[in-house]
Length: 573
Image (tube, rainbow, N blue to C red):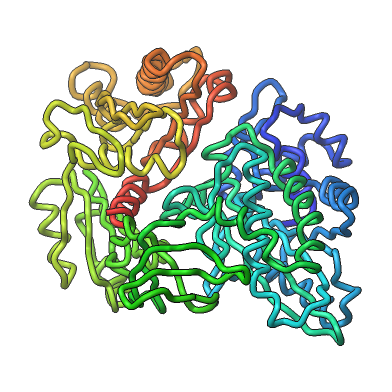
């Protein structure tokens, strides 16, 4: 993206309302230029904008800080900061400085909005979309040999954890340096070092999920649990704690932080499984952390000390994901089309869709992506005949899932779950990737389904009405003069085609607003109720909602919500 796009996002990233004239003046542009610029934003950002009476607002804050804010917060804590909007890796930028000299990297910060080659521990890929993740790297020169920096990652994790607690996020640490909320990952740290004469320069890369990543399983975000938090607050508290703790580590090592780290360690005194290269290594009980940052583990063979390296830790109670297929195919068998997605190590790698009349594309995709697929899991409302057509294209058996009395902590209050549409159920399970609030979940396809989920995970049921095409067909078949193409929806339609389009859209939007009001009354007036819309008609439904409703409530469009529900189910069961 161009610099003007990033500057506009930085102004809107707080989630507050801004008049377009104020935005244009701040950027030295005309309002019409801003409208044109917004149309060139990435799709995942473009749909976040709500406009009403000249006011612009994003439906949720983003992890984008202005250049001035980045530099001012850094200076106030003794750092020098640079913003590079797009780069391969913020760590790479500081490693270049570190190779010049220790002084060139010491107390320097590189903040970026987008990385093309971000990486995590053990060579893993760090995946994030612009605006979703707070990403920065910090250089610090230590008067210590590299061998004595073993506890640095733990100290940085503790600093990040304290920063999150300051803004109301009760994060924990998964040894050695992952930030988590329960089983879900909130952020990670990667430290790379360069030896310069008598000093070791550490480049500390930090990534925190500010907005929930949509393509990563077992992830959470700051906004999910603390929606009032702004990224500037997180950034400022992070620099505050690092500025205080890194000099102390340089003088005294990890020992002064040992007790505090242990308090925030998620798995202290828990039974855990250690894995290497995703293979079980041993099982034991965590006894604590040594003064050098190693893990103390009591196993059947006695106490072991585990140092950092190619070892991953999983709590015993959550050991089931170890057996989860590393590569699997998810299917959403809708009434009109089949959608699919290949998932590998929790990430969606490829997706597609096709009408049932011609399913050759999924067979072609299998030839290209199917090698190593261990499992095929699907949800279907399309009927047995269409399921058989799908099965004929694939060389492995399909596990077709139905609705369930409960799953992933969500209780299903449908009187007979066996007659509950599987698509509605997995839409509800998928909605928890986007909202932890009460939410109305809408699917706009052949039929329109409108379902209610409380903030404490009770699925209350919902309503079903004909989709746009079915409503039009009914009018065409059952009336004498209304068999004509639909026009456009208007507040006051003055032609019959437009009146048809308006009536159909009003029926859908009215049903959504009624359900939203009922759920708001159910959970209480002081709690947010989000609206999540999926399906082929999602965009036009969102556009047709009253502007004030969209300003007052979070409205999110999600493609393939059933797929994300299946992904959640496979990864967590």
